[in-house]
Image (tube, one colour):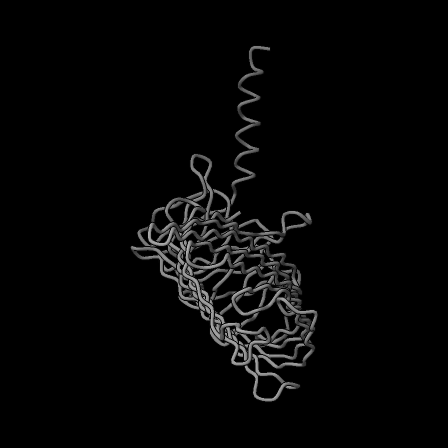
Length: 338
């Protein structure tokens, strides 16, 4: 019995080492053993036994091995699935797949994620909130947003919800709310296709409810460790309920969009996301809508960000009487990734 504590200690040590069997070597020849969480936006997220998850600049990693089942994405859009082994060459890693092993240049790898078997583990998300108060005119603005992503080998689905409420002494209360559901299937050469459903309300533009359903096709034009650039387009069927009226508008529309994400892991660390969409109407002659979203995020501590966002909407033929052709907002607040 006197040997039982020592035996238990050995068992615990073996279990911990088995759970933290991944290995990373830096360009200064220092080493870490732990668990590879993910690689994204130029940073490798790695958990060791004695620390929380830390981020490591990818271009400072010389060698890597992992027993995790991973999805590995290259800058040309090629996907591999398997574990990682060091090759003995600086800046090179071997992906061990069921079809066989293949050596890759580490500089060509732009994303790695663990392949999760459980349904709930395939979700990632972010929640944000902010309050802006101005003494002049007693202006107040409140906002709340939730983003949720579900990723499998073939499909990427997302749910985005946001709501903004503005109040002041010199103007009526104005509300803007958006809900977007998208699902895309990955194709070869960084192409993708899918469907979308959007619901939005914008009292400034005279819209009680606008609902759109459509199909989309897009391509990831640039995907590397410093930026992503996507273009997409498609067709929409849209129905609008007008503020203060029983009138409903139905229309067919086209859309073309551009998404550009820039990220930096040198001081100061930040990421900047821009999304521009133009929506010319097919059935309503001369009508064009557009929307611009710009978001800047700065990580203060792990997974907690300060967030500054701009959102602008334009409609050259707004359906509501006396409705404005433009609406915009600037919002700051906090965001938490989970």
